[in-house]
Length: 634
Image 1: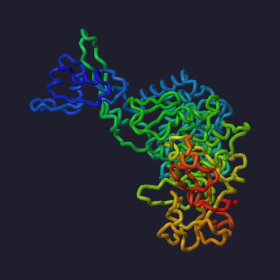
Image 2: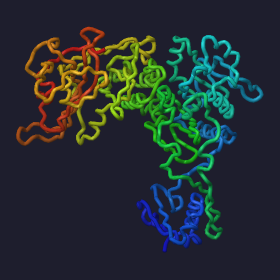
Image 3: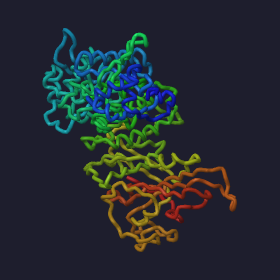
Image 4: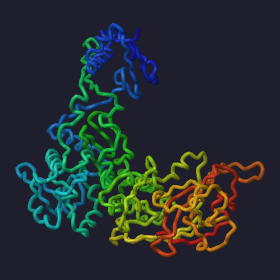
């Protein structure tokens, strides 16, 4: 009988096979692969083979697909995982990864840079070894950036302040540093790299004006670094990241296939480990990927060396390498290296692409992350906004206009974000005492958001056409720092002319509506049917009163319509047959702050699915007979 694993050679699409243990035992004397499999089983289940010989146990083989190195199972190239990330072998491996990228990866950027941060830490190397010294470079030098989590307990964490600035210029005792920064200094010295940028020490933390100025330089700081050390775990800077690696102990074991010289020996060196779907830590976001500030650090960095306590991982625009050979234990929601690569100015072939789809991806990812300071909402993503603002041009050759988290050129699309309902439908929005963003910006809320229209039209058989239903008269955003339009804002509003109708809560049931704060919305009398509202607060297509005569808690402001033209006509009326229309609108309420203005409280859409199309006909009952009005949204 042929070896069981030979079935995968005969049929590469076969998913699995199982045979009695006796088959493998009898084949092992002449088949190195069967012999290897028995050794693997004995390694993980000592005594099982001897125990199951008599009652003939079964061995089930899964074939994961892809290239087969030896015709048994899918095998991936791997490295011997270094047991200690703070050891010389770890320094040597990281140095080789960096050297290879600098020598071969053109798209990762040149070795030199013309930029120098305002401050750096001089770590001291060789005979000049000394405690770190904060200094102001007068010329560009190769430096390392640190991307890490501060943690929640930061009361006694050493930082640079107006009081400690002069002292830090004279030197900082290595032993006084938080453990994560201490480890970063050790690793940089191991790489023979002398200069390090760390936010807590290179930015004066209690000088607001200086802090805003340095924060506005994040794009330049991270994108010009030679490499970024990304500390995915732990979640506190007091814990440190160097030391024993979990994958470097007994998790992965080395075996050598027994192949005689006559059969082409010696055998191959192989590693065995648990199934790839069973990461030791489970499929969860790492701590670094939960922090808002760290998103732009991840995207801006040309090269990242990541530490998570399991193994070291290298990321750049050309490759991702982890020591164990599997690069997706926890699939990321986005590819940071490739996204940063696509937004860099030197890529002339990509500069013509529309960057706004990338921006909406960034917003969705960013809104899922947390910030210690609520006021940092726009600041912590401003470096990514600068990439688009400075590197992409509109049809007139001018930079695109950034407006409190949205873009003027695609304001209609950007304003249709919606809050992702949490599991259990329990909303817990933080109270923000000071103005941070207008209600029409996703930055107004601390909640995950998404752009649902992208999903709704992605499955259309016919390409949808956008039909604008409104006119954007003005969008004004006043930045805190006049020279930084991508930073925090003092005030903002949008003036839009569009069909506007008043409705009560029951009226919203005629469409698919997602409210931004359903836990804080005032409740009005519920309707039991879809007839005209008993409280006479809804538009019914017959009344011509001014808006002030309606006692409505909500107003619907129509934005645009999607229509998919099929190219076919109706047999009865000869009208064009279409998919849709799908109509998108904002849900507003009267502002309690500015008289006559409105505030956004949600977004909604009404969809007919398909039917005849007449451009002059109103298909949505919510807007039949309504008037077009100019409204100010704050």
